[in-house]
Length: 234
Image 1 (cartoon, rainbow, N blue to C red):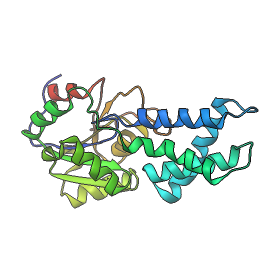
Image 2 (tube, one colour; image 1 turned 180 degrees about the vertical axis):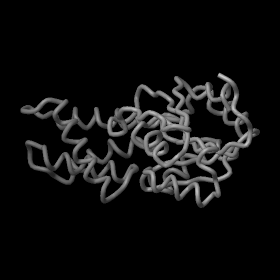
Image 3 (cartoon, rainbow, N blue to C red; image 1 turned 60 degrees about the horizontal axis):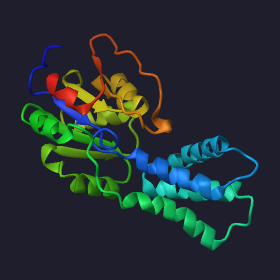
């Protein structure tokens, strides 16, 4: 594949694109399911219930650690076969708090590839979640220097992508969204007229799974196994 010309706008996702994120949530969920230790429904059924609770809470409370904590507590109240006490709620919340203490673990090739890309293109970090939480992770990652702007949005839908393009005076056909989520990074970006790069991550959050839409005529969709591959294209 030929290298694309310089001067493009690259919108880049953060969690599970630049650094590990979902693996820590999965560990917390495993601890939660083990603590609940339900005798009548399977761990798979517990997880399905938690997924449903998360979907509902996202609508009201958005993404991020506080919303996840609320979902764990709500799920525990819903499923606990024993009376729910303050001590038990505190234990459930501790599973969520354990996530915040993790160091930022960059994915392979991220820093050196970003450094190269920043010399040729305009990089904008575009992520969902709580602003303070995402800003803290970016600061601890050491990657902030490579981005000309940061967009922390409530949801990644076509309207949001169009608004980001407008705010930064970008042309859709010269803009690319790069991320690991078909649901948030790829399909809505394509629908908004951008090009996209799907970066496969084996531990992508289940609520972000989905089939990749084909690129509309005149747009491009590229699939890569790792972040370092961007350096060969851009």
